[in-house]
Image (cartoon, rainbow, N blue to C red; front, top):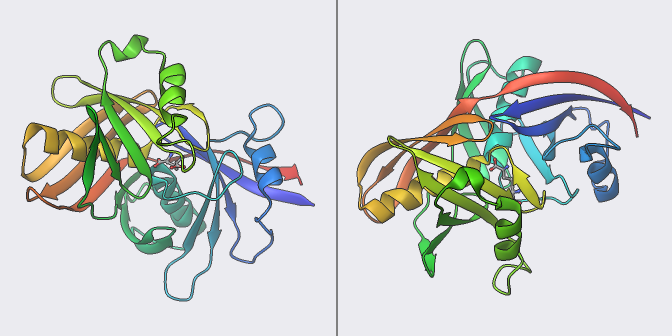
Length: 261
Ligand SMILES: N[C@@H](CCC[C@H](N)C(=O)O)C(=O)O
């Protein structure tokens, strides 16, 4: 069977998108999904998503990591699937859709290339030695780094993600360095088991952890630079709970094609 797909990227976090409103493909096939995400034997991507119809929402986002396993929320994936929904004519410039962590509101520019996605509220941040650990839809470990440009993110991220505390469930490892008015972030992603060019739930976790670390409250906007571009995180923090969290940035269609499955 031939599968028609679209390829999107959001700040360099790249995804395969499939319009599965007619249930053309049974996606519960980890081996197939892993092959499609493989950069040598397949299309290539940090993850694959299926846009599904839903009776109560504009659509449902069904997300899998590059290892073919279903995962928790993907922030950049969420932004890309909103751009895809606009491209398909499923939505106009606003939407309410369902993802694995619940419903999400999002806005998209008329041009369809800039997406602002509301993330889940966060009220718990814990510490693991100097690092911050929190869940922004996916689990994240946030640690400071000097000379981040030169850091071996693969080796250090792999070691933390596979230590006794995190090996079983897995966690995404974010290294953060202040860069003047915001932060530079590099992320080792669970399920890709490698560094990616951006991680939306990851930069969100960094922005929240840094507000707590710096004792900032009120309405906060945090610009973050990642390997694949720039993202903004906007939120309110009353000292206990983070609310009205928005992740915003570019989401672009790169190409479309057919692949034999
Ligand atoms: N790239 C994502 C995060 C995807 C999920 C992650 N790999 C996990 O398994 O936790 C993002 O943009 O948030």
